[in-house]
Image (cartoon, one colour):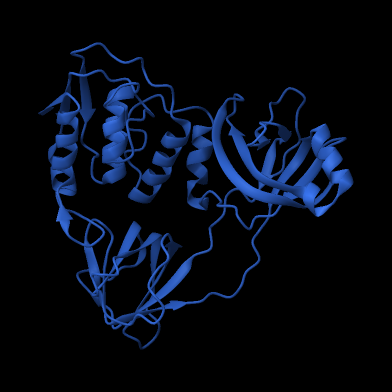
Length: 360
């Protein structure tokens, strides 16, 4: 989305050299920030679902567990289940391949789960190689370039145009830092911009760019007006959108309250602790208010319990409506498919950190 820049309007984006801290330039608009990353496709042959046939979005983390336990499970992230190919007994999954994946030629059965439930088993599987696609560039529209950038463009050599590691700093509607995307990139093209005198449209090679998922865009636009002011603003979101919200909490990390005095009592609204992001979002809000952060996993919660994140030991946590967490988090599946009790583990971690939990 292009827009003319008013004289009083703060720049929304800044391109920064991470080594020196130099700002290459600032602009109001960026094309290509929101997009879908290239996805891997697997066909699971001889598919037998455990319960319901997986369709649509089936999980943020889907594990493929081979029969050969010496190989370990493989992970696909942000996974969709597609319609079965006509007259076949197979299932097609697409997702972001986080690990190296299965060894070449592996054909044995694989069990599949999404951390909350077992999805099924297949006789064998195959990776479908996608057609080569050109990576879309990142275009900084109406960029006010620094003198250093102008000199690099004037020189025009491959070395001068190689920016190496840079950071795209995103600012909110009030000009405050909002999020940062690290890039390893080079300038692939530039031209005069129609958005103002002495402004350029700078095109960056997107080969090593991880875009923000397109489904997160509405939440980014919401957070551009600042962190939420009321607790539970995420509660009605599905798990996929909660994860996008949680990513914003991690990036923004509003300043935590000063560490409370010893003996403080916190209250956690547990009505919406129905998945893992709901657990950590609720805990963050209980300690540090709406949009608050208090860890992204058990290890991160343990770090927060050591101080510096709004908490001082010992303290008390009143966990209201704890039945929701007990129901949904007591049989989480580990990568190898074995169940464990995340609800019990978070209670244990809090207790070890000096937090006395009362299940209300």
